[in-house]
Length: 100
Image (cartoon, rainbow, N blue to C red):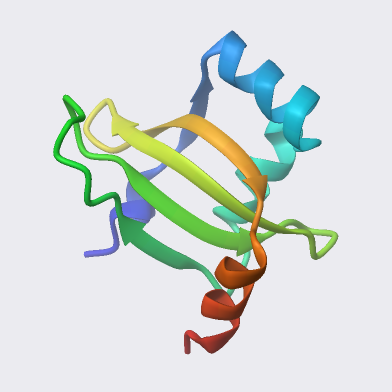
């Protein structure tokens, strides 16, 4: 089953939301749009140092802005707690374009 199928809402830490806006020019609503638009590339975060699984999703906003969003799932997968949202790097954009 697609783990994103259960997501009903989003949760943002105030500090992370401000950092995404101030440093990366990504407002929370743009990062949330990525989850609704196709194509979407979902990857597991491979680091073992986290207390809970983290995921990376590559996608685009309604305006076509390419973003990478890092998040965790909470509340039995119904809430995506966003850690950060930022524009994709050149390498990430190429990987996203190569995915079917």
